Length: 181
Image 1 (cartoon, helix red, strand yellow):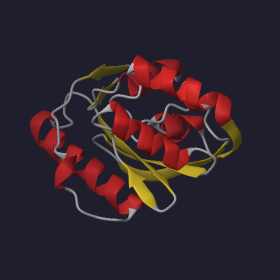
Image 2: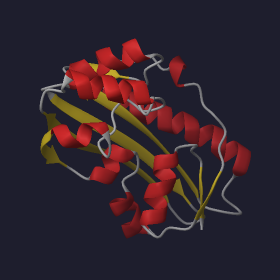
Image 3: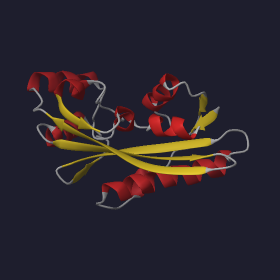
């Protein structure tokens, strides 16, 4: 049993599918305070910030702690969470027909070990169809998603090539985590 310090429904689903028992509770961290142009630096700082605040709040005596964050990058830009549908459209159009990297950092700590991992999954997307993009934007499913990207949803039909783990792209490298647990 571990404590997933994340409000992400997708991360919870990944742990369930991996057969890892957990409780889910977290204290938020303000990612907007991070200033960097380097995606790996950003995702590490965000994850470490979440780790620090959740470690202080919950500790690791009751349950091991797991925190994670994900960033999407394409064409040299960090693509954050969209605040509105127009911003989501612009973010998604940056990915359309291009290589998109989804980088996830996780920190796991129990009483005997601490694991820090930064993993990346790269996708080459075909160009998004306007009608399908409009439907996705109307659904609101992009909300709360780094880069407004859902490789398990909207983006799935547009994947031409992939290098890396899908779980990393969905927000948590469960393949690596399971190896350490």
